[in-house]
Length: 639
Image 1 (cartoon, rainbow, N blue to C red):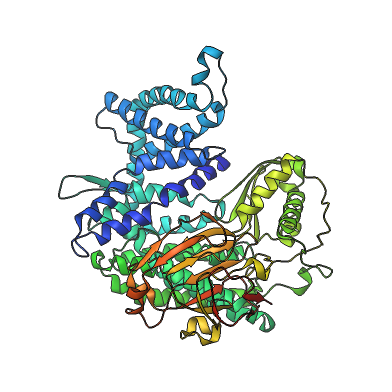
Image 2 (image 1 turned 90 degrees about the vertical axis):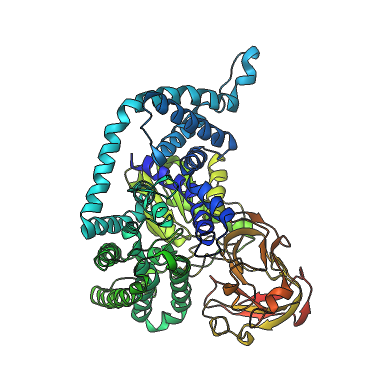
């Protein structure tokens, strides 16, 4: 059951990814912002159809191959379910729960019937074409049953929501505690779905009834926000302060290694509200700190509620959402002093516990924990990945112990015959950041953003029986730090992303980049506005303001291209993105188009930093000076 719920949690990520776009459109189109009703209506159309979006997204997530046929089945399932429920009881509205149930059933039916075969005269309806048909029939029966079963279930859910709301700070505190505590097992998205999309109801001026904390807040419900507000002090102040505490507690000789990483992930949490890199840095190394973190999150939500703060977010509780929703929040200024207090508490408690209990946070690992005879994996990119896949399979107990391999953003999700035989030391030696044994048959292995490449390599090896390595790759131990994915850098694999003059990193007129705090790199005084990919790899993230993009190479190198300086203030004006998050890219593929004439007149400089964010402790050597054309090879080396 836990594994099944985890799969729902993973599948929820796909439809939830539409929320930032919807929230941005609703807020920017509001009367107190741009006042453009077309924009607001576009956002409303997403929020108003979340059940259907959930049905489609979850069906794809459950499908073994993520095919569009499963998506169609999810849509059919939701449409049939909604229609049947109305015929039984017009007052029933399952909201996002209907979408979740429709998506799960459609995905399961797709996996069971995608390759069904019929006699020749019925063969047209076989295979994937049969899935929407059987889905419609099954959902008709389920809809009829739910027409009588769902009202008491909805009553229980409403009672739980009312309890949390009626109990004020205690209710929001319990939610905040569980929200963080469930992250290691991947079930936080399940509880978030209930709170974000079902708690409470609000009738807008035009008579539309909306449900859920996020939607009600964006629609102006004055009672919405208690379950969201307290996350801002945690994301913007608490966890960055935890990074400072871990840095101060690190061994003197290791501070230079971990310092850059902590600066990078702390800034990410503060600006965007993305905290997983920080939480994973101590979650498995020091579980006691993670329990403390969960408790402090609950207390932060309680304190925000006591102070009467009502604020919300569409993506996460970072600076971007704080600024965007400032105008519709209640007492948002109080979040700043509250955040400073929370940050101070995090620093004191984390530093005290780390020193007192000698916790092995990054930079405090015992030297004898590293393999004395270990050597990095050496070979071509494919050989290194193949070797890591081989040893990861062996660390999981061998091919006989692995029943199913799946992955999400940063972790392998595994169904095993026996999780007790997993060799955690071996897995960490070959690139794992942490191992979580969920149950007797389920485990998760934290890899990082390169997890997709490793998972696919493992699947290929498992199909072939995981044969022994045949190459000359040195496959002894490799101890990967949290700041590196074991990347291999080949100068000719990295090309000039845009035409312009190469300049050293320390000559960039911005201290954050020039100091190397973001990682080693270089700058380009760009001549034109077409930014191209310098490597083969994948788009990792695109900033909402389109002024920067993060990509990861096939070898695991994480690259940030920041177009111009202080360009975030343009809010995307003058920038056009040409790719999407998670899109596979090749060297020379256009990423972003910039109206250079417009941007140049609005910002201090169009010098574009290119930073290798997971190569801290290394230096970039510029091999070619002066003006270089886009696509030029061998421009830098990483040492």
